[in-house]
Image 1 (cartoon, rainbow, N blue to C red):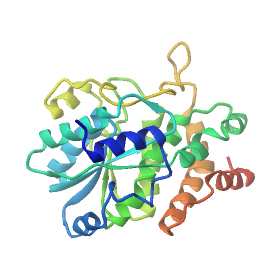
Image 2 (image 1 turned 60 degrees about the horizontal axis):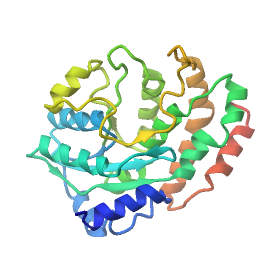
Image 3 (image 1 turned 180 degrees about the vertical axis):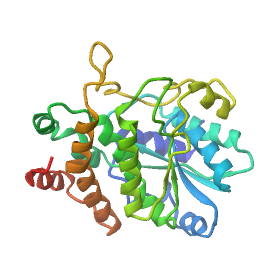
Image 4 (image 1 turned 90 degrees about the vertical axis):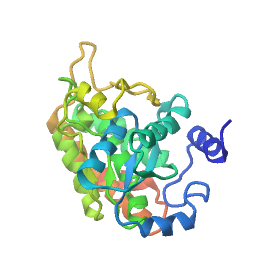
Length: 282
């Protein structure tokens, strides 16, 4: 039987409200915020599947974190069973029995996601020649956790990005993109940690986890998965196009959105996006 938090998490996963700075009490009670701020070796860990859990294990070994606040961020395109998200937290707790894994924080903003990735897709294709929402999606996923990390005392965020996956390259995890994600977080005095960045082998990830959890399994799916690959499997978006998209549009938009959140405001995401596109820098 699901407890109250699990039940509310499932409802939130279904409804996907604007939930970044105005977190309900069941997500993050004020008393938890105060307690987390007093913990010296605490980090926020992204809950996004197998690699995020492995990244937390590596980060604890490297930096000695004693406490982890798992944070799941929803997008506008996910589907699947909510239980896989809570299962990932359980796997994390079981793999790190000497680390305090605190209650899951659930947050997200489909309007933010839409502004970065969806609404102006046609315009971006026209300007860039091609476009994939996957790069902006990962920028969103990292950035939408920044207000939480700031609120808890400018805590590091641990993420499971890897530049290569058994020889495969994902455009949302190429070095240029990862450097950009780190840079945006750094602007707000947040360290974005990629402990698995230079681990290409899936077997090493399984070794870190101590089980046979396969890539892409037991986690929510995305209806746009793999969209940047053609019928022949080749990537259709170049590194230069990724850089143009990030630096000419997605990063300025993300910066403006996060600045608004940190002022306690929920911005008009689409208006900000349109203003940046009007500058003609993409």
